[in-house]
Length: 128
Image (tube, rainbow, N blue to C red; front, side, top):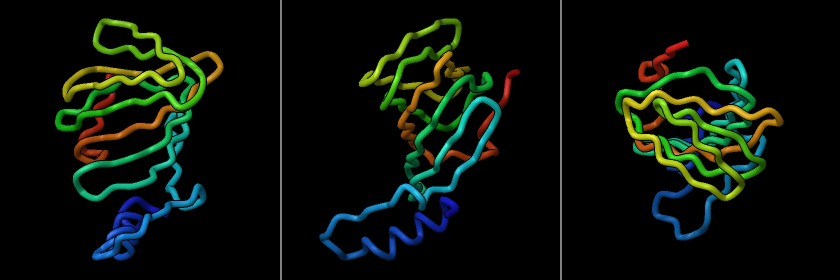
């Protein structure tokens, strides 16, 4: 299900309601850039939530978007600028706008990616 449809669906289901809202695993939109499998879970125009299964992403940056990584499974590394940061299950990383970054792991690892400003192809700038 595309992110806009999910956001619309969630807004319709959550407006004025006090019950929890669930997005099932099969309801996310899956995209497969080289080295990654990303399931877009939610976007409301202010934030975005996705699950990324990463082997080796391409180096890129976002001009406007903050990214927050939470490692859900496994371990890997993230190049952030000129620094390599090792991440393990349960670790958290904030990547500010304009910061070149890429995640990589020999065995792969799963990251919950939360973004302030939803992801947009117009704000995804490849460097390699």
